[in-house]
Length: 249
Length: 312
Ligand SMILES: Cc1cc2nc3c(=O)[nH]c(=O)nc-3n(C[C@H](O)[C@H](O)[C@H](O)COP(=O)(O)OP(=O)(O)OC[C@H]3O[C@@H](n4cnc5c(N)ncnc54)[C@H](O)[C@@H]3O)c2cc1C
Image (tube, rainbow over all chains, first blue to last red):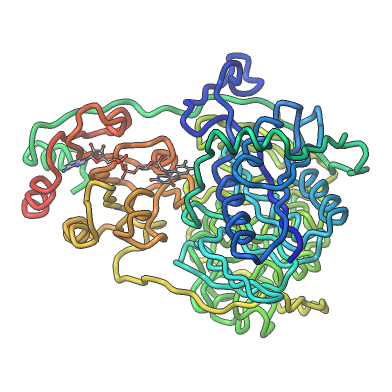
């Protein structure tokens, strides 16, 4: 195939202990480490492997957001993507808006495969890939842990609650990836230098004429109910006694 | 008045308990009429199970050969065809619902609300974000259909004993053939299902091999417990993926959760926040799991676990 599109979202790094702002308007992001959403990194790794096997010619990474998202796109280029597109948007788009932006890009780029993370670890929505597949009227294979391409179709193993489900989908298609699909490569310094010369197009979101759809309003954020540290027991006898005490055995 | 359509999850012969949990959530919307849609190749037995759930007004069956396997691509257009007149369309936040509901929402031109944990009003809900490190209150527009998934760990299953009406809802929709089911590999076991078990015993990376995991199974069997695992244990191949507990695995709420050789990474804790009592066994007294454990025991699991199994 000619082209694979991969989405890269800039999110709070997964190692950061996220804290809700005292006014409830969101979570603290000042001075907090930002990274590529871990699932998206896996999506990109898979696209690169497909290209390296000679099954695709070009890998294009896409992010939607402010100019700071260029950082994550540069990392994607350093990993090996050929080209990057930043769809510049001041407002944070909800999944339907994001899916519509991707649909506009799919049309522009004539992509035959879109590989995305199954969810972003900020909103934990797990929606965008399915929505893109819906409005594109194409197959979706979500939660992928194995992808085999053959001609005009792909066999995808999916991690579902009951185990591993395999589906066959015709291309073009949207695939969203789970953690066990692969282990993303580390970026080496020379690659970072090379990535600086790769094309990164900035596209104002208004140019795509996308309607973001009816908003779901974020009213307020609050910290979750916390669990308290309990008791420590010294040995198995103590543990059994404590369990009996709580009526659990 | 609110009219809620719930998409039943099932494996062809049995309704998944997630369906009755979604009913519990929907029943919190004041005055709501709750209908359950059963998409299947043969719906009879499943429909009877759905009609038994308290608060359900009507069960709609959609029998088609294509519904032998519940694929989002073929289900979504049918749900949309059925959606007329409903103010809410709910599914469980299981892999089934997560796969399907956003596809339905997009076809209806709305955003979806993921993982409802609290109902505040017909259009106002709470949901976890940032791996459960924050709780977000959201409000959907009153003039739009609400498409949502329900965080099943936040609700207990609605009781049985109802006799809702059952009727067939034939839908004339063309279905795509671009997505095909090949197979499902499932390590089906006789142990209680992880997502509904009252007791769960989980093992982590510390087990070191699939053979060593045996001591976890033995303890679980003694307790009549389901068995779970950390991502590290799944990644290392000690146990299959469907046993993973956490942000990207299963979110569970058993009365008793025993974490063995699990450090307590934030992504793992996301999956057990609603457990009744958390027991942690870990050789490192500084392990973060002890910060949330109700009962902690520091020591070597390879001696503690067999001893505990014998003591029970
Ligand atoms: C996006 C993302 C999503 C994730 N989703 C999940 C998820 O859904 N579920 C999940 O579990 N993880 C998830 N993770 C991974 C998570 O961050 C941790 O890496 C993982 O939970 C660690 O597993 P563990 O506790 O088994 O291993 P470790 O962190 O290595 O802990 C092993 C523990 O065993 C103890 N130990 C060792 N030997 C013994 C012994 N002999 N006796 C007693 N104790 C012993 C050690 O002290 C240590 O605390 C996710 C990560 C990311 C980035």
